[in-house]
Image (cartoon, rainbow, N blue to C red; front, top):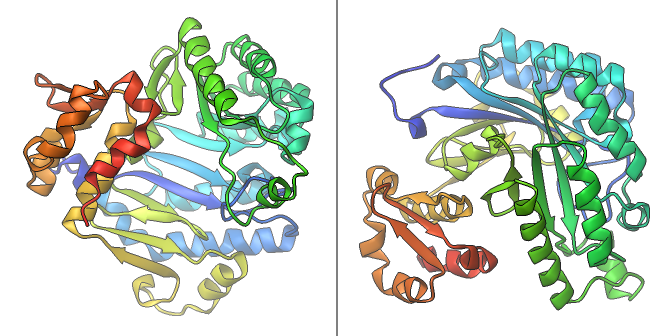
Length: 398
């Protein structure tokens, strides 16, 4: 329940629930997601998640009433809708789903139909996020996506028809066979739908993924570094011209349609997590669930106690004050408005401008960062956002 006397970082402001299933694993994906599980496994997983929710019911007391809800994956939409409904009802029964400021579910365009989207809307989800990635069929095939461009556009339209006023789409640039022309075409077709939130990420070839193997073998060629940089610039200029505000390094919105759930992460406020491989943060420590579906199900099936903290279900990481400050700055600087140094002082007892004065001086001189004394916020400039990772390193305390 809401406690008006606590600060936002002293109460859970969001809840993430992980659905690790997908129809087909994308070639670039290194997330905890798995293809090939049948209906029985999905139902067993649903029961395990509901048991975890029930066993953690006491934690709901420290959750903000308007905490955001986010079902991610994997592909949550591959779970039968009755399973999704069962999980939603468990969250409501035990006080985790109260009056969320936002309830999002991720959907693969290849698994979307009107009936499913209408059911999701009726369950209480008011925002849907589609993994579009591209609107070029050859680019989608090259990364192993199960949908085509037409299906993606149809899914966006169906979401509106189902009653979703808030719709988001993910895009990737730097894809195999992608050109500046094809990227611009994707951006034009996507923004022509009237969508008001877009996340755009540069392709990262993660070690151990099928994509990394194909690139190493020369079977897939990616755009060179200069072309990828031009693509980055194209995304910024195009979306700005179309009226989108860049409110975070990779996120763009019109009419204030920010992702409230992800904003909790960037503010470094506490968030709860349920499900296999789901990672939660209570303001001092991280708690991550077992990563494999079978282990997660087995652990919950066999657990006979009433306090999961005594189980082997989680890996708990205690964070030092230095690590907390480091992550706070990393996350806060991702936002266009920057990190609140007043909050850093209150939470961690550190004057950031003083503590990192020598490291920040050249960044101010190069106009990569800026400080607003009226709001006490340190932010990256537009140039700084291009080299954000280098700036984040300033706050690594060894």
